[in-house]
Image: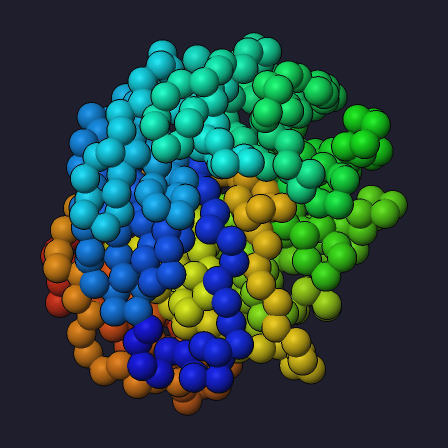
Length: 432
């Protein structure tokens, strides 16, 4: 990792969360491939591997003929799905294609590993089961009547799928049988969160539903958001939801009561991440914001040059996917006052986590070429400090270390203006 971005003590205490799968409708997505390596894919047809410590570009995985929509790593390889209907298995060490997995007749939207098996969902309304070693097709799970956008592994090892047909289904991944069909939403299901025998689903109908997975009963419907619910997260025994209405809401899962509304973003919230006793949120307003989950207060803000599509905790560093251009690497946030322990993240796409929309609208990605080498000074104080005299340092992959004077708890990770055509106008904000 870059010297000064994280202290040696923090490096020893922090460990990366389980490697997540990532899903998207076209905006940039990222996944933690292995210790020291992160994979990034955007609207283009290429997956790029970066070294988390030096931000050096390691490999470009080229072979898809359409935009890449999802990534899923295992111990030895990384799988990618695409609008071209193909799933590819890559050796992330040498960048070679190991398997071409064909069968879907529509865009592949999500990939998920469950009990050592790979599952894929598609625009063709089906879910397919694959042998991740040989790449052979094992079975087709049918039942949805619309495109299947999201897959997730439930804590008990079951497979959960969500579709544009407004339903959520639970499958036994070994017998390939449909166990439960959950109906009740009035529009597309857009995000999932499973924890301790309970399932929470967010929807384009602006509501969140709480289900009991043991008896498949609907426990409650939470209302309050004024637009599509984009992401869900469990933190400190409560549930946080992000929405395109620009707010984050905190809920008591026991009775469904609303505990707090976190306001501050100027565009739709696209992603949530829990780390170091804090809540991080990304949005289309080009910012990552740090909140104290205990009182809902805003602690700090980190700025980028375009909309945030996803947040990723790699243990030794943090990354955010952007609607355009290179991903952003930033240091761990400052600990909230009075926080003693350290906790790993459990957010979108973790083992017990939530799938969500990471940039609902498709955006044209800028060319991500470059040698990926970092430049500029490496020693810095933590960029999340609230000190008005501090210097914020964030790295946009391929652009080197970006410095800016901190003021009003705002920290910039914007592109170096020496690398930008100063006559051109800034890219428009995505409609998150």
